[in-house]
Length: 503
Ligand code: BES
Ligand code: MN
Ligand code: ZN
Image 1 (cartoon, rainbow, N blue to C red):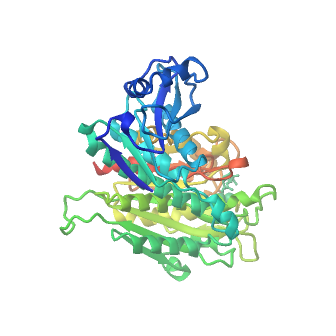
Image 2: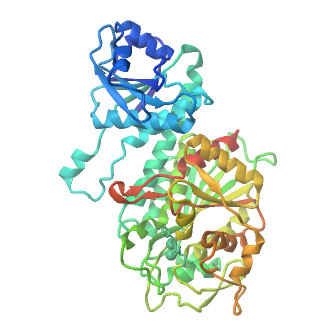
Image 3: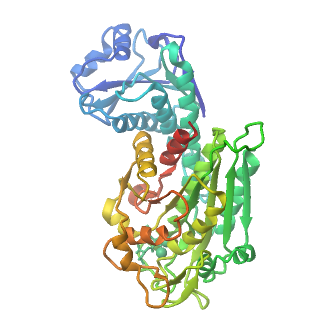
Protein backbone atom coordinates (compact mmCIF):
# COMPACT_ATOMS: atom_id res chain seq x y z
CA UNK A 1 0.00 0.00 0.00
CA UNK A 2 1.15 3.49 -0.76
CA UNK A 3 0.83 6.20 1.85
CA UNK A 4 0.82 9.82 0.89
CA UNK A 5 -0.32 13.26 1.86
CA UNK A 6 -2.60 15.56 -0.07
CA UNK A 7 -2.14 19.25 0.47
CA UNK A 8 -3.08 21.12 -2.69
CA UNK A 9 -6.72 20.52 -3.52
CA UNK A 10 -9.47 21.85 -1.37
CA UNK A 11 -11.24 18.99 0.35
CA UNK A 12 -14.30 18.94 -1.89
CA UNK A 13 -12.10 18.80 -4.99
CA UNK A 14 -10.15 15.81 -3.80
CA UNK A 15 -10.47 12.91 -6.26
CA UNK A 16 -10.63 9.79 -4.17
CA UNK A 17 -12.63 6.58 -3.80
CA UNK A 18 -13.60 7.35 -0.23
CA UNK A 19 -13.27 10.47 1.85
CA UNK A 20 -13.69 10.13 5.61
CA UNK A 21 -15.15 12.95 7.67
CA UNK A 22 -15.37 12.75 11.45
CA UNK A 23 -18.69 13.73 13.03
CA UNK A 24 -19.20 14.37 16.73
CA UNK A 25 -22.42 13.29 18.43
CA UNK A 26 -23.45 16.88 19.24
CA UNK A 27 -23.86 17.52 15.51
CA UNK A 28 -21.52 20.54 15.39
CA UNK A 29 -19.66 20.53 12.08
CA UNK A 30 -15.87 20.52 12.01
CA UNK A 31 -14.23 22.82 9.42
CA UNK A 32 -13.75 19.84 7.10
CA UNK A 33 -17.35 18.70 7.47
CA UNK A 34 -18.47 22.25 6.80
CA UNK A 35 -16.45 22.43 3.57
CA UNK A 36 -18.13 19.30 2.27
CA UNK A 37 -21.53 20.41 3.53
CA UNK A 38 -21.27 23.74 1.75
CA UNK A 39 -20.00 22.21 -1.49
CA UNK A 40 -22.81 19.65 -1.52
CA UNK A 41 -25.60 22.05 -0.68
CA UNK A 42 -26.15 20.74 2.82
CA UNK A 43 -25.94 16.97 2.21
CA UNK A 44 -24.00 16.41 5.42
CA UNK A 45 -26.27 18.43 7.69
CA UNK A 46 -29.29 16.77 6.06
CA UNK A 47 -27.88 13.35 6.99
CA UNK A 48 -27.27 14.57 10.53
CA UNK A 49 -30.88 15.66 10.85
CA UNK A 50 -32.11 12.20 9.94
CA UNK A 51 -30.18 8.95 9.98
CA UNK A 52 -26.70 9.78 11.28
CA UNK A 53 -26.13 10.67 14.92
CA UNK A 54 -22.33 10.49 15.15
CA UNK A 55 -22.37 7.57 17.54
CA UNK A 56 -18.84 6.25 18.21
CA UNK A 57 -17.96 3.43 15.84
CA UNK A 58 -20.88 4.07 13.46
CA UNK A 59 -20.54 5.20 9.86
CA UNK A 60 -22.66 6.30 6.91
CA UNK A 61 -21.60 6.29 3.26
CA UNK A 62 -22.93 9.11 1.06
CA UNK A 63 -22.44 8.46 -2.66
CA UNK A 64 -21.99 10.93 -5.53
CA UNK A 65 -22.61 14.14 -3.60
CA UNK A 66 -23.08 17.09 -5.94
CA UNK A 67 -20.10 19.45 -5.94
CA UNK A 68 -17.84 16.88 -4.29
CA UNK A 69 -15.18 15.04 -6.32
CA UNK A 70 -14.84 12.04 -3.98
CA UNK A 71 -16.86 9.03 -5.12
CA UNK A 72 -18.16 8.61 -1.58
CA UNK A 73 -18.01 10.59 1.60
CA UNK A 74 -17.94 8.38 4.68
CA UNK A 75 -19.25 10.03 7.80
CA UNK A 76 -17.47 8.45 10.76
CA UNK A 77 -19.09 8.75 14.18
CA UNK A 78 -16.75 10.09 16.85
CA UNK A 79 -19.10 10.02 19.86
CA UNK A 80 -19.20 12.80 22.43
CA UNK A 81 -16.78 15.63 21.93
CA UNK A 82 -16.23 16.11 25.71
CA UNK A 83 -15.16 12.49 26.25
CA UNK A 84 -13.14 12.19 23.05
CA UNK A 85 -9.71 10.60 23.49
CA UNK A 86 -6.85 9.34 21.34
CA UNK A 87 -8.24 5.84 21.88
CA UNK A 88 -11.62 6.85 20.43
CA UNK A 89 -9.76 8.49 17.57
CA UNK A 90 -7.93 5.27 16.76
CA UNK A 91 -11.27 3.42 16.81
CA UNK A 92 -12.62 5.87 14.23
CA UNK A 93 -9.61 5.31 11.99
CA UNK A 94 -9.99 1.56 12.31
CA UNK A 95 -13.68 1.88 11.40
CA UNK A 96 -12.76 3.78 8.23
CA UNK A 97 -9.99 1.34 7.27
CA UNK A 98 -12.38 -1.55 7.86
CA UNK A 99 -15.02 0.11 5.70
CA UNK A 100 -12.55 0.60 2.83
CA UNK A 101 -11.41 -3.01 2.99
CA UNK A 102 -14.96 -4.34 3.34
CA UNK A 103 -16.19 -2.28 0.37
CA UNK A 104 -13.12 -3.45 -1.57
CA UNK A 105 -12.17 0.03 -2.68
CA UNK A 106 -9.21 -1.21 -4.64
CA UNK A 107 -10.02 1.05 -7.60
CA UNK A 108 -8.42 4.10 -6.13
CA UNK A 109 -7.38 6.16 -3.21
CA UNK A 110 -8.93 6.20 0.20
CA UNK A 111 -8.52 9.43 2.04
CA UNK A 112 -8.77 10.11 5.68
CA UNK A 113 -9.37 13.73 6.35
CA UNK A 114 -9.92 15.95 9.25
CA UNK A 115 -10.94 13.57 11.95
CA UNK A 116 -10.31 16.10 14.66
CA UNK A 117 -8.61 14.92 17.77
CA UNK A 118 -7.75 16.95 20.81
CA UNK A 119 -4.45 16.27 22.60
CA UNK A 120 -2.79 14.61 19.66
CA UNK A 121 -0.48 16.09 17.08
CA UNK A 122 -0.91 15.79 13.33
CA UNK A 123 2.09 13.49 13.28
CA UNK A 124 0.49 11.17 15.84
CA UNK A 125 -2.78 11.24 13.87
CA UNK A 126 -1.01 10.32 10.66
CA UNK A 127 0.87 7.59 12.51
CA UNK A 128 -2.25 5.94 13.83
CA UNK A 129 -4.19 6.39 10.59
CA UNK A 130 -1.47 4.71 8.53
CA UNK A 131 -1.16 1.97 11.11
CA UNK A 132 -4.91 1.30 11.08
CA UNK A 133 -4.93 1.16 7.27
CA UNK A 134 -1.85 -1.06 7.11
CA UNK A 135 -3.16 -3.56 9.64
CA UNK A 136 -6.64 -3.71 8.10
CA UNK A 137 -5.36 -5.43 4.95
CA UNK A 138 -3.82 -8.36 6.83
CA UNK A 139 -5.42 -11.73 6.08
CA UNK A 140 -3.95 -15.05 7.07
CA UNK A 141 -3.55 -17.22 3.98
CA UNK A 142 -0.33 -19.25 4.30
CA UNK A 143 -2.04 -22.62 4.83
CA UNK A 144 -5.31 -21.99 2.96
CA UNK A 145 -5.95 -23.67 -0.39
CA UNK A 146 -5.45 -21.45 -3.45
CA UNK A 147 -9.03 -20.30 -4.14
CA UNK A 148 -9.71 -19.23 -0.61
CA UNK A 149 -6.43 -17.40 -0.57
CA UNK A 150 -7.51 -15.26 -3.51
CA UNK A 151 -10.84 -14.26 -1.97
CA UNK A 152 -9.21 -13.56 1.34
CA UNK A 153 -6.61 -10.96 0.61
CA UNK A 154 -7.98 -7.41 0.37
CA UNK A 155 -5.99 -4.65 -1.21
CA UNK A 156 -5.96 -0.98 -0.52
CA UNK A 157 -3.91 0.72 -3.21
CA UNK A 158 -3.38 4.05 -1.71
CA UNK A 159 -4.12 5.79 1.52
CA UNK A 160 -3.95 9.54 1.74
CA UNK A 161 -4.17 11.94 4.61
CA UNK A 162 -5.46 15.35 3.71
CA UNK A 163 -3.81 18.17 5.62
CA UNK A 164 -3.19 21.86 5.68
CA UNK A 165 -0.09 22.52 3.57
CA UNK A 166 2.11 23.86 6.37
CA UNK A 167 2.51 20.65 8.33
CA UNK A 168 3.27 18.25 5.50
CA UNK A 169 6.61 16.97 6.84
CA UNK A 170 5.11 16.10 10.21
CA UNK A 171 2.35 14.14 8.56
CA UNK A 172 4.74 12.39 6.19
CA UNK A 173 6.84 11.28 9.16
CA UNK A 174 3.73 10.03 10.90
CA UNK A 175 2.61 8.07 7.85
CA UNK A 176 6.02 6.49 7.52
CA UNK A 177 6.01 5.49 11.19
CA UNK A 178 2.48 4.14 11.01
CA UNK A 179 3.30 2.06 7.95
CA UNK A 180 6.38 0.57 9.64
CA UNK A 181 4.36 -0.31 12.75
CA UNK A 182 1.65 -1.95 10.63
CA UNK A 183 4.24 -3.96 8.68
CA UNK A 184 5.82 -5.07 11.95
CA UNK A 185 2.44 -6.00 13.42
CA UNK A 186 1.47 -7.96 10.33
CA UNK A 187 4.69 -9.97 10.52
CA UNK A 188 4.00 -10.66 14.21
CA UNK A 189 0.43 -11.70 13.42
CA UNK A 190 1.48 -14.01 10.60
CA UNK A 191 4.04 -15.76 12.82
CA UNK A 192 1.48 -16.13 15.61
CA UNK A 193 -1.16 -17.47 13.23
CA UNK A 194 1.10 -20.03 11.51
CA UNK A 195 0.56 -23.59 12.75
CA UNK A 196 3.15 -25.04 15.14
CA UNK A 197 4.27 -27.66 12.62
CA UNK A 198 5.32 -24.79 10.32
CA UNK A 199 6.39 -22.10 12.78
CA UNK A 200 9.13 -24.05 14.59
CA UNK A 201 12.22 -22.64 16.34
CA UNK A 202 14.07 -23.22 13.06
CA UNK A 203 11.41 -21.23 11.19
CA UNK A 204 11.76 -18.30 13.63
CA UNK A 205 15.52 -18.41 13.04
CA UNK A 206 15.00 -18.40 9.28
CA UNK A 207 12.64 -15.43 9.64
CA UNK A 208 15.33 -13.49 11.51
CA UNK A 209 17.85 -14.35 8.78
CA UNK A 210 15.40 -13.25 6.09
CA UNK A 211 14.87 -9.90 7.83
CA UNK A 212 18.64 -9.43 8.00
CA UNK A 213 18.80 -10.00 4.23
CA UNK A 214 16.03 -7.50 3.59
CA UNK A 215 17.30 -4.70 5.85
CA UNK A 216 20.94 -3.74 5.86
CA UNK A 217 20.88 -2.40 9.44
CA UNK A 218 19.98 -5.90 10.74
CA UNK A 219 22.37 -8.76 11.53
CA UNK A 220 21.04 -12.18 12.54
CA UNK A 221 22.80 -14.95 14.38
CA UNK A 222 21.06 -18.25 15.13
CA UNK A 223 22.76 -20.47 17.72
CA UNK A 224 22.13 -24.24 17.65
CA UNK A 225 21.84 -26.71 20.55
CA UNK A 226 25.60 -27.24 20.72
CA UNK A 227 26.33 -23.52 20.90
CA UNK A 228 23.56 -23.03 23.47
CA UNK A 229 25.13 -25.77 25.55
CA UNK A 230 28.54 -24.11 25.32
CA UNK A 231 26.93 -20.99 26.82
CA UNK A 232 25.77 -23.16 29.76
CA UNK A 233 22.11 -22.29 29.28
CA UNK A 234 21.09 -25.32 31.34
CA UNK A 235 17.62 -24.02 32.16
CA UNK A 236 16.66 -23.21 28.55
CA UNK A 237 18.08 -26.51 27.30
CA UNK A 238 16.19 -28.52 29.93
CA UNK A 239 12.92 -27.38 28.31
CA UNK A 240 14.18 -27.91 24.74
CA UNK A 241 15.35 -31.45 25.54
CA UNK A 242 11.80 -32.83 25.69
CA UNK A 243 11.22 -32.32 21.96
CA UNK A 244 12.62 -33.69 18.70
CA UNK A 245 12.44 -30.20 17.20
CA UNK A 246 15.88 -28.54 17.56
CA UNK A 247 15.98 -25.35 19.68
CA UNK A 248 17.36 -22.04 18.47
CA UNK A 249 18.75 -19.01 20.25
CA UNK A 250 18.27 -16.02 17.98
CA UNK A 251 20.21 -12.76 18.18
CA UNK A 252 18.88 -10.07 15.84
CA UNK A 253 20.72 -6.78 15.99
CA UNK A 254 19.86 -3.38 14.55
CA UNK A 255 22.82 -1.02 14.26
CA UNK A 256 22.03 2.50 13.07
CA UNK A 257 24.01 3.62 10.06
CA UNK A 258 25.82 6.65 11.41
CA UNK A 259 28.60 6.67 8.87
CA UNK A 260 31.10 6.89 11.71
CA UNK A 261 32.54 4.13 13.90
CA UNK A 262 30.94 3.54 17.29
CA UNK A 263 32.21 6.03 19.85
CA UNK A 264 32.01 6.44 23.62
CA UNK A 265 29.20 8.96 23.42
CA UNK A 266 26.84 6.49 21.67
CA UNK A 267 23.91 5.43 23.78
CA UNK A 268 23.88 1.90 25.18
CA UNK A 269 21.61 -0.54 23.30
CA UNK A 270 18.09 -1.48 24.26
CA UNK A 271 17.58 -5.25 24.43
CA UNK A 272 14.24 -6.96 23.74
CA UNK A 273 13.85 -10.57 24.88
CA UNK A 274 10.93 -12.60 23.46
CA UNK A 275 9.59 -15.92 24.73
CA UNK A 276 9.69 -18.28 21.76
CA UNK A 277 7.86 -21.44 22.81
CA UNK A 278 6.52 -22.54 19.42
CA UNK A 279 4.20 -25.01 21.14
CA UNK A 280 3.45 -25.37 24.84
CA UNK A 281 1.80 -28.69 25.69
CA UNK A 282 2.91 -28.21 29.29
CA UNK A 283 5.48 -30.98 29.22
CA UNK A 284 5.06 -33.80 31.80
CA UNK A 285 2.73 -31.41 33.70
CA UNK A 286 0.51 -31.79 30.64
CA UNK A 287 -2.15 -29.18 29.87
CA UNK A 288 -5.82 -30.19 29.43
CA UNK A 289 -6.85 -30.96 25.82
CA UNK A 290 -9.45 -28.17 25.40
CA UNK A 291 -8.05 -25.23 23.42
CA UNK A 292 -4.54 -26.61 23.59
CA UNK A 293 -4.10 -25.55 19.95
CA UNK A 294 -3.95 -21.96 21.20
CA UNK A 295 -0.58 -22.74 22.75
CA UNK A 296 0.92 -22.27 19.27
CA UNK A 297 0.72 -18.58 20.24
CA UNK A 298 3.25 -19.15 23.00
CA UNK A 299 5.87 -17.62 20.69
CA UNK A 300 4.11 -14.27 20.40
CA UNK A 301 6.77 -12.61 22.56
CA UNK A 302 9.36 -13.76 20.03
CA UNK A 303 7.10 -12.72 17.15
CA UNK A 304 6.69 -9.23 18.61
CA UNK A 305 10.46 -8.89 18.94
CA UNK A 306 10.85 -9.80 15.24
CA UNK A 307 8.00 -7.46 14.26
CA UNK A 308 9.44 -4.61 16.32
CA UNK A 309 12.91 -5.06 14.84
CA UNK A 310 11.38 -5.07 11.38
CA UNK A 311 9.73 -1.72 12.14
CA UNK A 312 12.92 -0.33 13.69
CA UNK A 313 14.91 -1.34 10.61
CA UNK A 314 12.34 0.09 8.19
CA UNK A 315 12.44 3.37 10.11
CA UNK A 316 16.25 3.34 10.21
CA UNK A 317 16.01 4.15 13.91
CA UNK A 318 19.01 6.01 15.28
CA UNK A 319 19.44 3.75 18.29
CA UNK A 320 20.91 0.29 18.67
CA UNK A 321 18.27 -2.36 19.41
CA UNK A 322 19.04 -6.04 20.03
CA UNK A 323 16.44 -8.83 19.94
CA UNK A 324 17.08 -12.09 21.82
CA UNK A 325 14.85 -15.11 21.33
CA UNK A 326 15.16 -18.44 23.14
CA UNK A 327 13.01 -20.73 20.96
CA UNK A 328 11.95 -24.34 21.55
CA UNK A 329 8.92 -26.56 22.12
CA UNK A 330 7.60 -27.69 25.51
CA UNK A 331 6.46 -31.31 25.07
CA UNK A 332 6.21 -34.40 27.24
CA UNK A 333 8.65 -37.22 26.40
CA UNK A 334 11.10 -39.65 27.94
CA UNK A 335 13.73 -36.91 27.88
CA UNK A 336 11.51 -34.10 29.15
CA UNK A 337 11.85 -32.24 32.44
CA UNK A 338 10.16 -33.98 35.39
CA UNK A 339 8.63 -32.29 38.43
CA UNK A 340 11.38 -32.36 41.04
CA UNK A 341 14.25 -31.98 38.55
CA UNK A 342 16.86 -29.40 39.49
CA UNK A 343 18.62 -27.52 36.67
CA UNK A 344 21.45 -25.00 36.65
CA UNK A 345 20.85 -21.74 34.79
CA UNK A 346 23.50 -19.79 32.86
CA UNK A 347 23.72 -17.42 35.86
CA UNK A 348 24.80 -20.33 38.07
CA UNK A 349 21.59 -20.18 40.12
CA UNK A 350 19.84 -23.55 40.50
CA UNK A 351 16.11 -24.06 39.89
CA UNK A 352 13.80 -26.79 41.16
CA UNK A 353 11.18 -27.48 38.48
CA UNK A 354 7.97 -28.14 40.39
CA UNK A 355 5.77 -27.69 37.32
CA UNK A 356 7.11 -28.29 33.83
CA UNK A 357 4.35 -26.05 32.44
CA UNK A 358 6.05 -23.00 33.96
CA UNK A 359 8.59 -23.26 31.13
CA UNK A 360 8.55 -19.67 29.85
CA UNK A 361 10.56 -18.36 32.79
CA UNK A 362 13.00 -21.27 32.36
CA UNK A 363 13.90 -20.25 28.82
CA UNK A 364 13.77 -16.50 29.52
CA UNK A 365 16.08 -16.55 32.52
CA UNK A 366 19.05 -17.70 30.44
CA UNK A 367 18.33 -15.15 27.71
CA UNK A 368 18.19 -12.44 30.40
CA UNK A 369 21.61 -13.52 31.66
CA UNK A 370 22.94 -13.49 28.09
CA UNK A 371 21.65 -9.89 27.74
CA UNK A 372 24.23 -8.66 30.30
CA UNK A 373 27.02 -8.82 27.74
CA UNK A 374 25.55 -5.88 25.82
CA UNK A 375 25.75 -3.53 28.85
CA UNK A 376 22.22 -2.46 27.92
CA UNK A 377 20.51 0.81 28.81
CA UNK A 378 17.35 -1.27 29.34
CA UNK A 379 16.12 -4.82 28.86
CA UNK A 380 12.47 -5.52 28.16
CA UNK A 381 11.19 -9.07 27.98
CA UNK A 382 7.91 -9.87 26.25
CA UNK A 383 6.17 -13.15 27.05
CA UNK A 384 2.87 -15.01 27.03
CA UNK A 385 3.93 -15.97 30.52
CA UNK A 386 0.95 -16.69 32.77
CA UNK A 387 -2.74 -17.55 32.67
CA UNK A 388 -2.86 -15.62 35.95
CA UNK A 389 -2.16 -12.38 34.07
CA UNK A 390 -5.24 -13.02 31.90
CA UNK A 391 -7.27 -13.49 35.09
CA UNK A 392 -5.90 -10.23 36.53
CA UNK A 393 -6.14 -7.92 33.49
CA UNK A 394 -8.27 -9.71 30.89
CA UNK A 395 -7.60 -8.95 27.25
CA UNK A 396 -7.39 -5.17 27.54
CA UNK A 397 -4.06 -4.39 29.19
CA UNK A 398 -0.66 -6.01 28.97
CA UNK A 399 0.83 -6.69 32.43
CA UNK A 400 3.85 -4.47 33.09
CA UNK A 401 6.34 -5.33 35.84
CA UNK A 402 9.41 -3.26 36.65
CA UNK A 403 11.34 -1.96 39.62
CA UNK A 404 12.36 1.09 37.61
CA UNK A 405 9.73 3.85 37.78
CA UNK A 406 11.41 5.65 34.90
CA UNK A 407 11.32 2.64 32.57
CA UNK A 408 7.80 1.69 33.66
CA UNK A 409 6.50 5.22 33.07
CA UNK A 410 8.06 5.41 29.60
CA UNK A 411 6.45 2.11 28.63
CA UNK A 412 3.04 3.05 30.06
CA UNK A 413 3.19 6.35 28.15
CA UNK A 414 4.17 4.62 24.91
CA UNK A 415 1.26 2.22 25.38
CA UNK A 416 -1.23 5.07 25.83
CA UNK A 417 0.08 6.93 22.78
CA UNK A 418 -0.05 3.79 20.66
CA UNK A 419 -3.47 2.76 21.95
CA UNK A 420 -1.79 -0.50 22.97
CA UNK A 421 -2.02 -0.10 26.72
CA UNK A 422 -0.24 -1.75 29.62
CA UNK A 423 -1.07 -1.74 33.34
CA UNK A 424 1.57 -1.70 36.02
CA UNK A 425 1.57 -4.64 38.40
CA UNK A 426 3.40 -5.02 41.74
CA UNK A 427 6.84 -6.57 42.05
CA UNK A 428 7.71 -6.30 45.72
CA UNK A 429 10.22 -8.52 47.47
CA UNK A 430 7.48 -9.79 49.79
CA UNK A 431 6.29 -12.03 46.93
CA UNK A 432 9.73 -13.61 46.53
CA UNK A 433 9.20 -15.97 49.51
CA UNK A 434 6.71 -17.96 47.47
CA UNK A 435 9.58 -19.17 45.28
CA UNK A 436 11.37 -20.83 48.20
CA UNK A 437 12.77 -24.32 47.55
CA UNK A 438 14.41 -26.76 49.97
CA UNK A 439 16.43 -28.32 47.16
CA UNK A 440 17.56 -25.45 44.91
CA UNK A 441 18.13 -21.68 44.96
CA UNK A 442 14.51 -21.22 43.88
CA UNK A 443 11.43 -23.09 42.71
CA UNK A 444 9.99 -22.34 39.26
CA UNK A 445 6.47 -21.73 40.60
CA UNK A 446 5.07 -19.72 43.49
CA UNK A 447 1.64 -21.30 43.91
CA UNK A 448 -1.80 -19.91 43.08
CA UNK A 449 -1.75 -16.49 44.78
CA UNK A 450 -0.43 -13.72 42.52
CA UNK A 451 0.72 -16.12 39.82
CA UNK A 452 1.74 -13.42 37.33
CA UNK A 453 3.64 -11.55 40.07
CA UNK A 454 5.67 -14.55 41.26
CA UNK A 455 6.53 -15.34 37.62
CA UNK A 456 7.90 -11.78 37.30
CA UNK A 457 9.70 -12.21 40.65
CA UNK A 458 11.40 -15.31 39.25
CA UNK A 459 12.67 -13.34 36.24
CA UNK A 460 13.80 -10.44 38.45
CA UNK A 461 16.43 -12.72 39.98
CA UNK A 462 18.25 -12.77 36.63
CA UNK A 463 18.05 -9.04 35.89
CA UNK A 464 20.03 -7.42 38.69
CA UNK A 465 22.63 -5.83 36.42
CA UNK A 466 20.51 -3.51 34.27
CA UNK A 467 17.18 -1.63 34.25
CA UNK A 468 14.55 -4.20 33.33
CA UNK A 469 10.84 -4.46 32.57
CA UNK A 470 8.68 -7.49 31.89
CA UNK A 471 5.56 -7.44 29.68
CA UNK A 472 3.14 -10.34 30.23
CA UNK A 473 1.12 -10.48 27.00
CA UNK A 474 -0.77 -13.72 27.71
CA UNK A 475 -4.08 -11.82 27.50
CA UNK A 476 -3.29 -9.32 24.74
CA UNK A 477 -1.22 -11.15 22.10
CA UNK A 478 -4.19 -12.88 20.54
CA UNK A 479 -7.94 -13.00 20.23
CA UNK A 480 -10.05 -16.09 20.83
CA UNK A 481 -13.50 -16.81 19.37
CA UNK A 482 -14.67 -15.68 15.92
CA UNK A 483 -11.72 -13.35 15.37
CA UNK A 484 -9.26 -15.97 16.57
CA UNK A 485 -5.76 -14.93 15.65
CA UNK A 486 -2.69 -13.00 16.72
CA UNK A 487 -3.28 -9.30 17.47
CA UNK A 488 0.17 -7.89 16.71
CA UNK A 489 0.41 -6.44 20.22
CA UNK A 490 2.59 -5.12 21.80
CA UNK A 491 4.46 -4.02 18.66
CA UNK A 492 2.84 -0.54 18.67
CA UNK A 493 3.79 0.00 22.32
CA UNK A 494 7.38 -1.12 21.74
CA UNK A 495 7.91 0.93 18.57
CA UNK A 496 6.45 4.06 20.21
CA UNK A 497 8.78 3.48 23.16
CA UNK A 498 11.82 3.01 20.92
CA UNK A 499 10.95 6.08 18.81
CA UNK A 500 10.84 8.12 22.01
CA UNK A 501 14.17 6.67 23.18
CA UNK A 502 15.84 7.39 19.86
CA UNK A 503 14.90 11.05 20.39
N1 BES B 1 2.14 -20.28 28.07
C1 BES B 1 1.58 -20.45 29.36
C2 BES B 1 0.81 -19.22 29.83
C3 BES B 1 -0.48 -18.92 29.13
C4 BES B 1 -1.66 -19.45 29.61
C5 BES B 1 -0.51 -18.07 28.07
C6 BES B 1 -2.84 -19.13 28.99
C7 BES B 1 -1.70 -17.77 27.46
C8 BES B 1 -2.87 -18.29 27.92
C9 BES B 1 2.67 -20.72 30.38
O1 BES B 1 3.77 -21.40 29.92
C10 BES B 1 2.04 -21.55 31.45
O2 BES B 1 1.69 -22.65 31.17
N2 BES B 1 1.94 -20.98 32.64
C11 BES B 1 1.34 -21.65 33.74
C12 BES B 1 2.17 -21.37 34.96
C13 BES B 1 1.79 -22.21 36.14
C14 BES B 1 2.13 -23.66 35.89
C15 BES B 1 2.51 -21.69 37.34
C16 BES B 1 -0.08 -21.11 33.90
O3 BES B 1 -0.29 -19.91 33.70
O4 BES B 1 -0.97 -21.90 34.18
MN1 MN C 1 3.48 -23.51 30.01
ZN1 ZN D 1 4.16 -21.25 27.92
